[in-house]
Length: 258
Image (tube, one colour):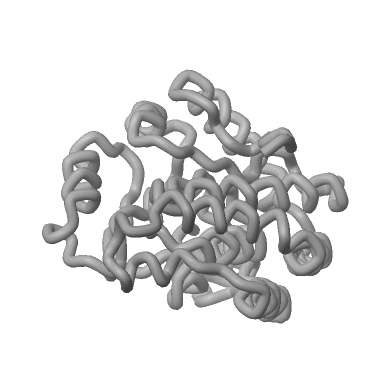
């Protein structure tokens, strides 16, 4: 692919720089007005539709690489087509239409005359996501992170490496068209070494979400690898089945800090 991949870490040493940039980007994206975040989401949906061939070309590369090497059910999940791309763009617009999750008052207690304690939803920070090998997962994560004002560092499965790289070129386009978006709010890392490097910098990462949801945590070798990594983590972790900011319970997770 000839286009520069501005948001893809190339090696373990570069991962540290990307993490620092993501932390800096978080302080900007978390304060963007919802109108800007929604405009960025609409831009993402439009770019996905207009530049779908870029993503589909990467996906065809993944299909060719893994043809005959995966179980039929796993291989079927790799496939993208125009109908699926339109569905994904519609899902991004669905996230755009959600109410702003930031600044919601969840609870209020009167402590004294003129003194009220409020529990208010705020973004979590930099979220490191390890996710399964499905090409549609990446836009789901990015759209929810953007809506909720979080920065993300993403580690997908090797089976969708070309698809994920291609989609990150679309993220570059979104950043170019929405100048308020901070560079580095979304970063893709690609190797196990990159992930191990990430574990060395808890000062940059506020939450890890790890473990494939479609396997038992002890049944899948990648999940067991993640379990071994957990002993090295110093920030908060969500494992399989616990919910996350890019899943069904994203609004509850976004309100994790006071």
